[in-house]
Amino acid sequence: MKMKRILIICGLFTIMGCTNNENLNNCIQSLPLNITTDLNNPQLINVLVPGGYVSLSGGSKGILLMNVNGDDFVAYDKLCPAADCNTPMVFERGIVLKCTCDDSEYGVGRGIGGAPQTEGFVCPAIEYNVTKRGTSLQITNF
Image 1 (cartoon, one colour):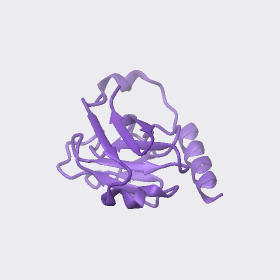
Image 2 (cartoon, helix red, strand yellow):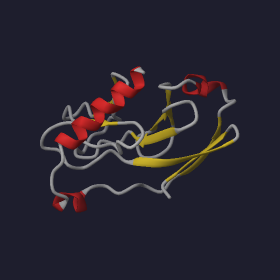
Image 3 (tube, helix red, strand yellow):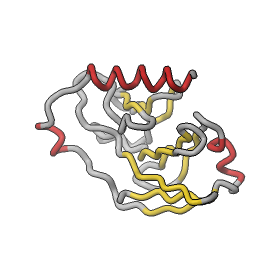
């Protein structure tokens, strides 16, 4: 129930923050990535429950892997989309990735797509595809 509320709130922020797509051509596109990991790995214990998450190495600045509802997963690169920032984004309040260089925030979760939650920012966080097969997760940019 709490997760549904969070997703609805993030969805509303996304809708309210809609702008035109002219500036999206200047955004970083997804980076080449193909990682396979197993949910039986002890490092992934926190991602086994709905709303759970872990940080993985890979991508540009690391990857946030989040369990949406027990069966579905989302993954985001922790590279700040709008700033030339040397530090990876941090996961806050269970609903956003935050770039500490410019305080911009990006929504995470199923169907949110890393949409910017901070006024004036148009580029989304890079979202990767996650495919679950048994206990195996494949995280890719295709």
